[in-house]
Structure formats: C-alpha cells, structure tokens
Image (cartoon, rainbow, N blue to C red):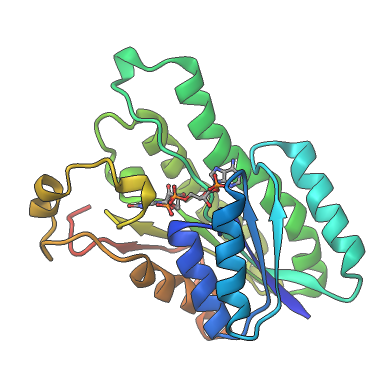
Length: 242
Ligand code: NDP
C-alpha cells in the first residue's frame, strides 16, 4: 500500500493537507513535534473518512530521530512504502537581522532546510527503487520575495526552492516529481499574531487565504494526474505580486 507522510501534519496547513488526502482515499502518516492533542484531533478527523492513518511523532530537524522513526515505520509495514512526502513542518522566529540571535537563525533553518534534507533523503531510497514518488515542499512568498524581519525564514524557504529544482532534475527519470507550493498569508496559528487588517490591504483579493485553498494544490501535485509537472513553484497568494 502507498502512504503519504505529511510533516507538521497535525495543525494548520498540514492538517488541511491531511483532510484533502483523506478525501482522496490516501493512507496517511501524520508527523508532528510536540502538540499531542492537535495531532490526535487530526488523526480522528482523517479516520472519520474511513482512511488508514497513524501518528509519527519526531523532530524533523533531528537526524537520529528521523532515521529511528522511519526505520520503525518501515519495519512495521513490510509491504507498504511512503510514496508521497509533504515537507510542511516549519516555524517562524522573526526579528530584524541586526537583533537576530543564533538560536533564531539556526532553529528556523534547521527545521525547514535540514528537516527537508533528512527526511527526503531517507524516503527517496524507496521511491527510487519503486520508481514512483511525489515530493511537495511547503515554501513561502517570503522565500521568493524576501520579507523584512524574516532573513532566517526567507533564507530557509529560498533554499527549499533551490533544492526543489535541483532534486527534481536528479529523480525525474525515476518517475518521481518534486514541486513546491509558495503560500502568501494563510489563516493558521503561524499567522495569528500578524496585523491582519493591515496586511490584507496588500493582497489584491483583500483577504488571507484558507488552509484548504493550499491543500487543493498539494492534493493535485500528490496525485498521478500531475505526472508531467516537476521542479515548479506554485504561488498561492491571492494575487500578491512576487
Ligand atoms: P503551524 O504553526 O500552524 O503548524 C506547524 C506544524 O509544524 C505543526 O504541526 C507543528 O507540530 C509542526 N512542526 C513544527 N516544527 C516541527 C519539527 N521540528 N518537527 C516536526 N514537526 C514540526 O504552521 P502553518 O500550518 O501555518 O505552516 C505550515 C507550513 O507552511 C510551514 O512550513 C510554514 O512555513 C508554511 N507557510 C505558512 C504560511 C502561512 O501563512 N500560514 C505561509 C507560507 C508558508 P507541533 O504542533 O507538534 O509543534
């Protein structure tokens, strides 16, 4: 059986992606780092669609934890493999560069960039041998345009775009596609501290996006229907110029 793994799948955009995959009938592995209650809620939501689902708690930025979790999952699923990977786990720790400390810099890059590396490298082995895979990376408007106060986050998300394009070319012949989606401002916990009234004036559509509007695109990129699209970055931002 083919499974989809959604990192940071317990809340926000990741949860909406899990709901979309559940509607598509795709068995799901939900990764998260610490919030057990949110993960349990997402698990129950997915199961309500009658779809196989399980939780896999680990920190994507910790290479030993990634290896252990995936090795255990593989051992428990000898006849299954993870054919769809959504690298969605991410954090924000905004500060002006001049005031940014090393922790803020490293934690953001470790989660987005190193997390992408550890988990993707591990799951690629099976995708290559099975000659099929879908990898979708959650980047951001911030990684395309750069946003002040986010040199750490913009760097991490821009790196993810470079990695998407490079890896897409490495594995295209194995029928593995690698794409990125770049949301603008989306209503989740991550953006709840922002000045919505001020920021939505910048968006031609005059509003923040909904997680489901991002999940629709991820669902398409995860499906077999997207077979000739790879190395692309799809913006989902209500018309914000990037
Ligand atoms: P949320 O803060 O709502 O959710 C983040 C999710 O990531 C949670 O499930 C969290 O798990 C998980 N997570 C965080 N760090 C780790 C880690 N080290 N290991 C495993 N899981 C982790 O964020 P959003 O849903 O808003 O964002 C999801 C992705 O989309 C991020 O990559 C973000 O950068 C990107 N994005 C978001 C935008 C927005 O406007 N919201 C815009 C553009 C991009 P737990 O709860 O257990 O900590």
